[in-house]
Length: 410
Image 1 (cartoon, one colour):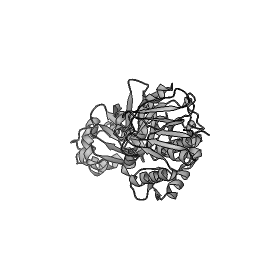
Image 2 (cartoon, one colour):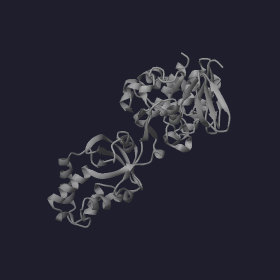
Image 3 (tube, helix red, strand yellow):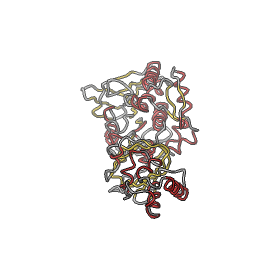
Image 4 (cartoon, one colour):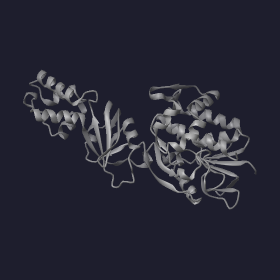
């Protein structure tokens, strides 16, 4: 049984770890609780699979929200260029879209999974499907992996790539945290990251379905700005979502309870307060006898005019020629600083990724091996690392998986 490796978890990190270990001639078994591998990959990028990001490796770490230094060895050992080359060598064609996002040319996540499966077959990886792990023990130098169906597997080395707690229907139910803790590891409390935000006072549902582009978005926690960027936003039945909101959620400190969070939207980020006021003056002068709600159609989408004016305590039916200077200034301020009190994030089950996980202080960043248990390795979302949207989290999974698989018994 020498040089026998078990990888638990058939996602991006697990498949890459299994491939990297098997290509070195090791006997590798990939254990996946589902009926097939890559189940979470299938839904990434809205079914298109945003494989990685085409940015320079040195810029990659600017998009990592937590423990970026820990990832340096893994990302430099297996950067985005190496991943793309490997996938293309195995038949997958890729393309680069806005923001450096890399997708399969076919726009089908299934093609990425098929390519990874081919790599596993060619490398000689044995797959064990429906292998739902109950517990793991290591009385001496051998890992004993006990399955819920009563079976047991043995290996000299173990790679945990079980994911986090987001999207539990894909198999990410937090099992890996329990296994890690049983081996003495500290697990930083898992919390949602890249997740929509819930409105505390009910204004967002009135604008449900409205998508805005190129707005300024700022997030405050306990009165301090934690995020600010321009991007796309979507109003929903519970609050706000969209790329800029998901990115902002990465910077929420969940240890500060109760959460004191406020979002601020700038509907006219290209205009200074002075230039916006000048535009309002022109709009009002050109439409002196029109009601405010009709003039606002030149400034905002129709669906949000009534809730916007009501929030600013402005009479929608008032004629523009009777709008006072104070009201006009208040209107301009609302257009630049529209405030939404946030009650909470959506549940972790709805998050794109999980923040928290196995403490990086207890993992060797050069190998992904546990500093506590010899021949135990970690890869992917189970580790306390996460990044912004745009393919960075999948690259983390592939990079840590590749490094773990390349380091076993080394």
